[in-house]
Image (cartoon, rainbow, N blue to C red; front, side, top):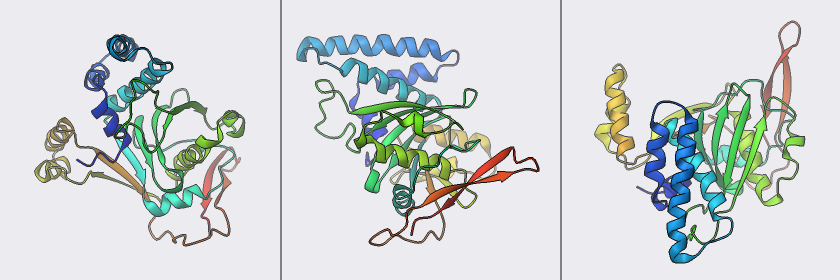
Length: 280
């Protein structure tokens, strides 16, 4: 396995990751899972501190990441990413004033990988009943080789976004280094609602072919479930790739940034949708 995705590296480097996944996979209240994860991470970090000493900021960062990872596991361990052309286009697209009225996301919780000019990743938890998105942004090198997460806290930024409310006031205070990644993530949410976008679920390169065939069986749900379970148990990752067919490439200088325009719907104009105008 290539470990190209930050969430994979997190699972490999944290000794409690497997137990966190087990706690969040149990049926019942997530509050119990959250409490259990808090106790688990606190206990394990106390043991680490006996050897390396206490490190400011590490307990807080690790608890945030453990909870985000727990929701990621609970909702299917799904990863989403934009293809290279779309990632560059989104990096050169101005934010909409508001997110869409209705979001179309691949899962209630997933990890979004962003490559290119605004590289990094985001743990995403969608709370549709509250019309909220909980985001944990991480750098491209998140949990990479040589990361001493037990001594130096992983750089991250957390944010809750309400939709379809105005975005600008909600982004006040976001540090400049995090804004390119955040804007690509938010543009990505809007992009996933576009009719021209295709979302293709694939298994990462190197996945066991026999299990992939079973997991994508066209007619038998039990076979699909068995194949998918085998792949996940072995540590393989399902990736939803977001792309726009026939999207013109952006070679060299971008002369005109992309943007969103809002189109009113219905006789009374009470509903609306976003329409993307690609950068040129």
